[in-house]
Length: 406
Image 1: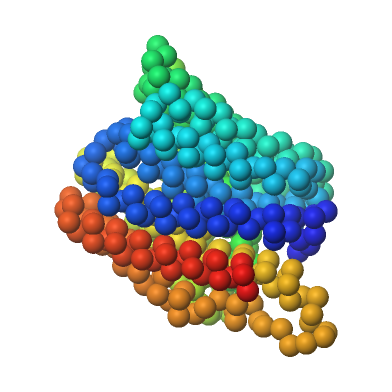
Image 2: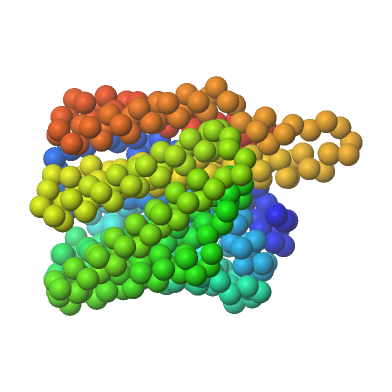
């Protein structure tokens, strides 16, 4: 993997992304202490938490990963690599304004939305320009291109919502669901699916799924998100039900692919990356089951199901891969030139193993405790789980800072 400025951004450009993502993860876990576990999904406190977690942690981590892995996957150089000096600045400034808008003054929401949109537009412009230079045409590259389209559509819907919160006479419900599904399903989930089909075989020495196999997950998710947006904006319930079935199929098929990749590992090593992948895969399976049971008449399972999807699947998938991506970038830039001159550390030696184990145990225990709390709707138990997740988040922050300074 070439991480020169001509190919992928060097470590000094990407360091702010990893720091902001880690700080946002810590902040999101701390905010759990102030959440009402019985509150509506559209309450401002809940919406603020979701934006901090999704924009600050999930999206920032995805952008950092795509900046390095995207050119390798498409076998083409970045078209506008200098954009990455600005993207994180716009997104962070916009996120802070959004949080202030949700908690203090709603008039700030359009300004925050515009800044986030500007940062994401720079990312989308660079990535689409990079994709145009690609040498390989696969379902993974097509899913990345579709994800960028849904990203821009979702952000535009979010900008409309910001004006609705400030009194614009538009239907809140329709734009709300279009915004949620475009960004969550169309951008985040689709990119996680496509990236993991590359990272899991790369880091786990496992068999990669075929292009045709992944095509089923990609096409059904893209179709489902498109139909959901249309069904929401047109208030057509039948279309929304079809869209939900397509997305549920996509997640189920991807989950099958993920389990196949993890079970086909040629060199089974239960390191921190593998343990995070196990938790992510199990969380995905339980999340799908809970959401499916919710549609069959058990609505109280929706909240813990979505929680497992957000914090269990997305969270551990990202945390686990950060343990591989950051050490590789650090080693490649700082130690690779010294290979023939002096002894250099191995990749796994850059990770503080005791700190990684502590982070995993606290985070995993917190995930289990908070999920149980949501199942029985016990606020005190949820606070205990939030405390465990917060401690795990601080361990992850210390690990990231230590790796970037090593």
